[in-house]
Amino acid sequence: MAFIIEDGTGSGRTAGVSDDNRLLTESIGLTFLDYRTSLGQAYNIHTDTLTLTNAVEDGILYIKNDRANSIMLVSDILLGVGKGTVGTGDVIFKVYANPTGGTLLSAGTAVTPENRNLGSKLPAQLTALKMASVGQTITGGSLLSGRVMQDASRIDIGAGWVLPTGSSVAMSVTPPASNTSMRAMIVATVAFLS
Image (tube, rainbow, N blue to C red; front, side, top):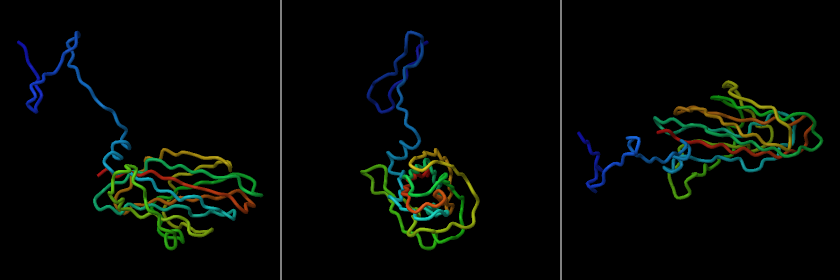
């Protein structure tokens, strides 16, 4: 007995079958980030170029999910640092989960997230702050991730961190010992799941 699968929109088209008796289908695969970008629900948050003129831990970037009843995915973090002057040793990068204070949170400079869909005007509904002056601090919370790297290099962290409403992350960079001038930039990619 033959069974025919027809197009549900009334076009009269039917599904094809291969010589191996398999239903012919076609699909388009997108990454989750690409899909959320197509909906206008993914954003880049960047610090622009910052100059670190010390050798202590500097709070660089803070991101908090402010969207009610929503989950935000921190998909990727890209950190680039330039060649420091005078400093010797490694650069230390840290990420803190749910920090509770510090001068980065109380006196950081607001950052406007950029929608990855250039045709979308949907607002990000998040708080993003970058370092306003050297030596800004991050307090409270817990260490989520970290990396040790050389100056004049970059790292790309496939983060995959899930931030429910009200949750946050903050990032810091500690330049090499005796540093007097090192440039740094962070770009974070976030997407809302709902």
